Image (tube, rainbow, N blue to C red; front, top):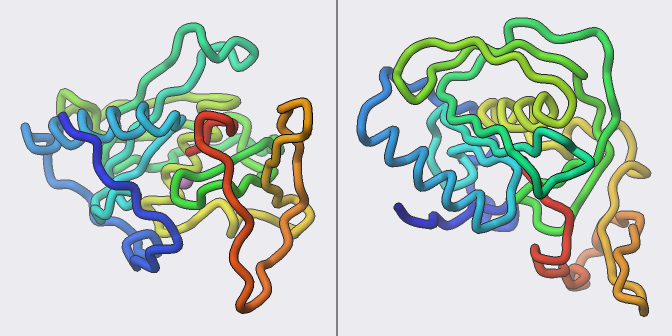
Length: 200
Ligand code: NI
């Protein structure tokens, strides 16, 4: 297994903006890719990772989501999926915080369907149906967006819903409203991933 390099928007790589190609079958190479993606996601404290985020234009994703959102250190549900496709979504939406490993430091409050049903290829090469709700549904929708070349910032309905974090004098995280950078000024420093909430 190997930790792969994560592509960020600053790399200007079109792979993040292009719809990914479906895989034809699950083989050893794909299983090895899932392993690398799990390792890369875990190393980055991520909740999910899509293949375009490591520079590969295939419809392949992983996710690792706490079963109990209030207790993120407890049990997690793992997903290793290829060609995921939304079969059904609930009318009910829920607004919640998202970040992205490809947009370091930026967070936003995004509306996502509360419940979803997904058809995908699983690790054993068979089609499986995944039903998810809450945070798991949010992460899966975020990753499926990546496979369609869509970033969470495009799901944001207003600049007011975007923010970064800084540490106050007590060392606590504080939200800072996002301001588009002015030309010629360097972007503000980004806190290390170890200090920030997990992202997708
Ligand atoms: Ni992301």
